[in-house]
Length: 283
Length: 348
Image (cartoon, rainbow over all chains, first blue to last red; front, side, top):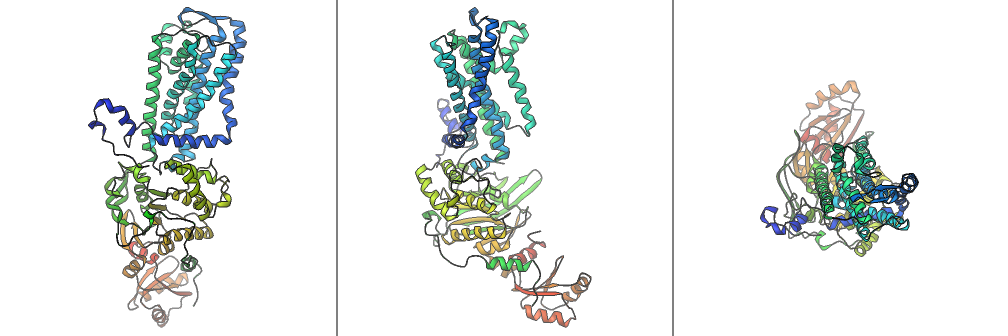
């Protein structure tokens, strides 16, 4: 796989920067090699596809128990823009966002840590023309492929239960993938700093409160203002607001900054992860 | 003549078991780039003052060497001599701390991926993918090189035959023996038909029989003109496989040449190995030091007498009134070269 020589960043005019960023030899945002790593994972999971079921079943159980069970008691909630909606319709998009987060985090942390420290998968990968940033994008890409399967299955259930209220919901799966991208990037970047399994407590310590408090089960209004402000800047909240808006058809330009937030989070994670793998393994 | 219980006898025996036949493995095609063209002497790797520093430790301390196409080049030295660090720098998985390194005329820091595309690497510890089968290991590794699946499939069949793993093609990797895993790693490194094959301690950790199977395969690659770079602390491995080698010690190159040249330059043609009772060894050393035209090395369990004529030296020993428990006359080996150059043994 011979590579073309690419001029350094400084030599390039700004308008062609993005493609150049993807191509520079040492620091890029992934490349063709990423697909080879995805192919490797697909081959492994072809034999153990059973483990893929849990990623779908978990949010479904939450939806059935909390959404439908608790929904009988709660009835209605005041949703975005002051609309009064059924509790289950309120909770379902949040569960989709949460499952996108959990799936991405699981793939990009535990699995990556194992491959990095124990299976030494990347050591052998880096003896080939593959680059560290291609590995980073490959891992994140694989997490997103799994995530998109879960999201699609969950959407089907939501549709069957009559929880989809707008054509905007067609964007739910892409947004769930975006949420996965943000968390997979951050998760993988964080994993490169971990030295033992004990450090994974920090992951649960950050994802569980996000799941419980990011307006998953009740509107933001129940919190005092300082708590609201804190929650408004956490990443899962962005995802929940986006999916809830799309699913209920309450869409406005205010959603765009939240998309930007998740895009930047994912790209930042991807860059950090690539550079850290480079530093850890090519020393 | 009595034989010492271990040591030298083990080495000569091991060397004797290496394949003598010159047959080549016909099923394995060798790309044109791998075959030696003696007339050209094309330099593939050039290192000048190459250095690798970890914190305060200078693992590789300013070494110079060149590798030309078609040769088998070895780094011989004890553990910690800097062989693996050098190998990792050549493999573009570790940037040099100083000096100059050019591989195919390219800079490993800036052109790492393009250089690695033309190298095959057998690392010291197997890094096989345990979640894949034997065959899939070759497939996915080939894919990392951007090879097409049909090309990989065709090469996989030949390579698994070559490393005698065809029957295990669809097995998982974990249950394979150490020797099989090492052979699979070698097959994997050949999937891209590399111009240079890097082997870091290819037989370390293998039992003697498995080691000989690996040697046999490497010997066949050598016969086919594949350019090999290997590190080893087994002198018989270096002697049998290497056209040219450097002796490394504490990050530096102590000597360079073909095995024969090194022995001629740094040792005597013959070595007389003597073993005495523990309480007699000290006295024997004093008397042996007075013998004409010899040099002696005192090891923990025996005394080595370096001489042009072993029989004559043994006769001299008898005339001194010394009665060794055992004595052995053998040809000098790279072990002796190493002992002479560094004052230490290789496999300590």
